[in-house]
Length: 139
Image (cartoon, rainbow, N blue to C red; front, side):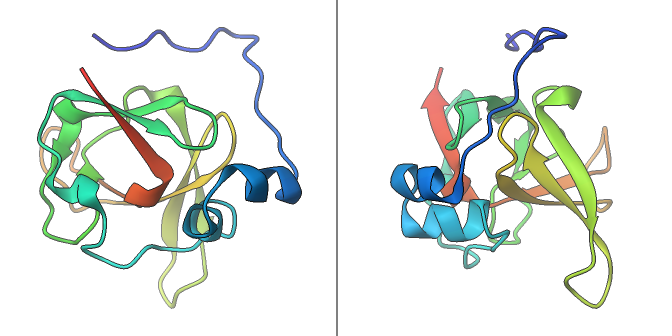
């Protein structure tokens, strides 16, 4: 069962860099606030097989369901779609040679990873997510 969509009047979370540093580990801050990337194959969530929901470590918003997780072989937890369309925001990322689509938690703005068009059916999308910014909660 999916969590309800946020109400039309849901409030976005806004925190200062100081507040983020107090809440997050150094690695979570580097990846989530500074748009970094964790090293491939370092997340324990790569091998997580239990049913459950992956939440944002910054605000607790449910972002990804175990129902949509798959093993992409890339070294990062991968999903073929977010838990709901409004859970994540995307923007073009021109930090590398080729432009990519970066994704962020729609509630607090933490950087999650990138979405690519080489995933499995039914969406054909691969949401390649940094495990360090996820909080897995088993069903």
